Amino acid sequence: MANANGTVKGALDYLEGHFGDFQKTLVELSRVPSVSAEGFPPSEVRRSADAVADAMRRTGIENVEVLEIPGVHPYVYGDWLHKPGAPTILLYGHHDVQPPGRPEKWLSPAFEPTERKGRLYGRGTADDKAGVMAHVAAVASYLESSRDVPCNVKFVIEGEEEIGSENLGKFLDKYKQKLSADFIVLSDTANFDTGVPALTYQLRGICQVDVEVRCLDHPVHSGMWGGPVPDPVQILSSLIAGLQNKDGSLNIPGLYKDVAKPSKKQLKRIRKLPFDEKKFKRDAGLLEGVKLAGEKGYSVYERIWTRPSLTVIAMESHPIQGSSNQIVDSARARLSLRTVPNMDGRKAGGLLVKKLTANPPDNAKVTAKLNGTTPWWTTDPEGPAFEAARRALKAGFGKDTAMIGAGGSIGFVQPFADMLGGAPCLLMGVEDPPCNAHSENESLHLGDWRKVMRSAIHLYDELSRVEVKPRR
Ligand SMILES: [Zn+2]
Image 1 (cartoon, rainbow, N blue to C red):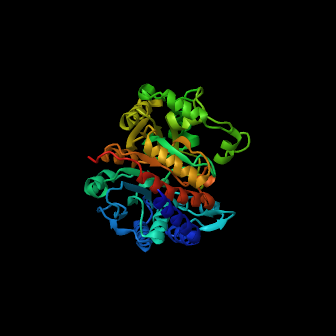
Image 2 (image 1 turned 90 degrees about the vertical axis):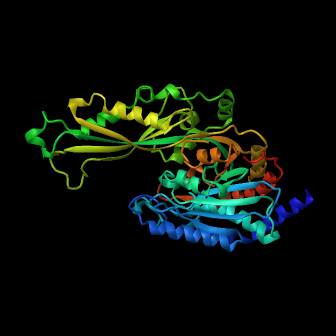
Image 3 (image 1 turned 180 degrees about the vertical axis):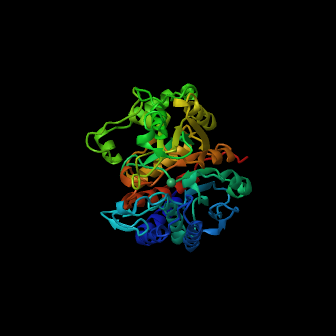
């Protein structure tokens, strides 16, 4: 393997010499406000796709194109396929971002990437433009140093991950042939800690339900009518409060019936991980004295990775500003339910709808509807591809890899794993616990980012020696 190692060394040296250039490109990409959510200009997501495509072309990645499906935020594709007989790696990331949140909470503007104390602050700097750029940089380092990569590589950079990959099915149907591969590497997850790499082998799914309570056909004076006339806001609040039992479990009949018990192997894996409650609270940003919530009898990691949970992600009736002594006519909330193996998202959503609409207090008009679902995903992280990834991460970080679950959802993983007939999915990311992804002051730890790039360089080399199943 002297030859392969020589190539690896060349790529690592190139990376060290040009890290600043890759950072500049990341800054350029992060300046584009590619928010995929409704109400933000889709033209910016398109501009972002073009910028990612340009960054890829500049490095020698070939066949770069912006993939279009009418009405869908554009995806970006690119490849380098000059290694006949070697495996093909599909590298996944996304270039769309979450909305910036409250501008006054940002210490530097969301779309003006700013470096402070070894971290690059800005929306998308970590999630997931750094994930995209880590692999662009790793492939570029090979191509620039030796015009050669140990494996064939294909990039697919999604434009609608942050809104649940709604059109992924359509996209896969159209581009199935183009995306065939032996391994999938996704860089959109978190590491166990700053400086401690992780491979993620389980993700929760999600289902979203909107609920509305209506009692009146118009708001009325709260003094003249208050008492006998029911208040939709209080009814909605009581319905939401009723979804939780005293022991922290969810009060949704039938919900836990399909929840899989983690295997002994998985429990052992989870229990091996160190847990520091103080640090966990600090990383989450919990205020002094606030206690942890959730189901009794399960460790914090078990609660986040292996148990369903419910969050009220929006609630509206009347804003405080401009409020007056009224009973408002209606109130609404959006609930987000995280699902785990072996729950069915649609079924879970149906149970939640049923619970909310059965026996409404005061016979109020309660309607609830399921908006959409994203599936959970799990894999058995054993075998040569995972061993190769662990070696690569150890080489990049100088530390052993933590095997973790994640509470979040990535809609892309399950459909892709299915399409590729069970090809190993390696989820290695750039985020660390204090990165504030999805919140204000999102940031990337630049030292870890460099380690991920180094790991990626090792990974392509490691995977080139893993025997692959003949493709279906
Ligand atoms: Zn992401």
